[in-house]
Image (cartoon, rainbow, N blue to C red):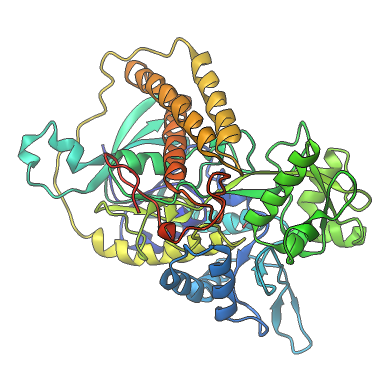
Length: 540
Ligand code: SIN
């Protein structure tokens, strides 16, 4: 067994920032299930929203966030996180993160700020169209130099260890307070499960886009933190609000490739198959309306005409500008035979960002002592029913700072509970890998068909019934066979999908990203978070 003050699951912006903030105070481990650079963060193109110019103000940013969140943002949370953004960004700059900027006539540095949907001002800090990669580069460089941080690559968290679970086998713990005391971790190289004791455990595992057939997320985004927290009895919130990014490249070989909203910020327009700029019929903010509005408009246009995609046209901007501002997107499009300086890009909406997650307070604490959640895994109350573009890197950064300050206090508490080794029992090696792949595909397709951009009671019920059957089959697999990364991900995927559908079924109204034909309007009764706790029906 290994013992640490802090164990962080996930190596994106949230996990790495937290590690750097606490490492001087105690032994720190980062667990990451693939390579250290494989995270949702690394794929973030657009940028980090933060008030950074004279034309902008905290009030404008707060207002835009609240409008996008459609009545469900917690205003105190919004104000706290947005207000602390500039100071946290300064720390990123001091670590060597390079945001695009110019030097003005007075010799001052001025950021080249981008614009995205729902923002009334230019406020997106970016590094061309590879902002997340740049942030992660600098953070990883700092982490790798820190003597107190051990980074375990190819290690996948299996489950959290809680006193509640231990009590079942250790009667002496009967009166021990409920808390998280560590976790089991699967080493993908030697295929063994190790026990890690931690005073503080942090879930920073990113999102769950892989629950859907079409997503902009990397393959690691399987809802691991959400599913583990659920199994450990932690409270979850707002799982029905999956954000679909309006513009993912439509190409048989280019699945998952995001065409950043920043293109629309630089003037790209959306056209249907008869060449009409259709956003004019949907919202006066046109292509820069919040994402839920644009994604639904695209979905409606495609369904109306039976089209497979719509087109995003930025060919009116000079080729030199496009190459300089969007080098990654330009290169990817050219690779697929599309010259965006000459022709429109075929695009479709795809699952992009989980706005709900493990419910935390403003210090990143879950309702289970010893367990924190930060970044996309968490639901702080910032995003409400629909995240404002580029607010998520900011949230991950600020909440990592805040959680680290709190966790340093909590990590001082020591507890001396014996932690059992992982018990493999009679488990066999999986002899039917095909079942894992089949179930994985089935979940992703049924979520796409029945729990997509537009929902109905009937479709959600269908999804729930099928997921129940799949869950039973997957549980049986889990108990009878030795764990593998694929099986662990599948188990997390089915749990996360089930929770999303349960939450969606309980919200009998349309709000933000949750749109259902059965209840197309807002209903004040539902102007609150959907809470999910193991053993209870969804409540608010
Ligand atoms: C994008 O570049 O369009 C994605 C930005 C985000 O999701 O915040």
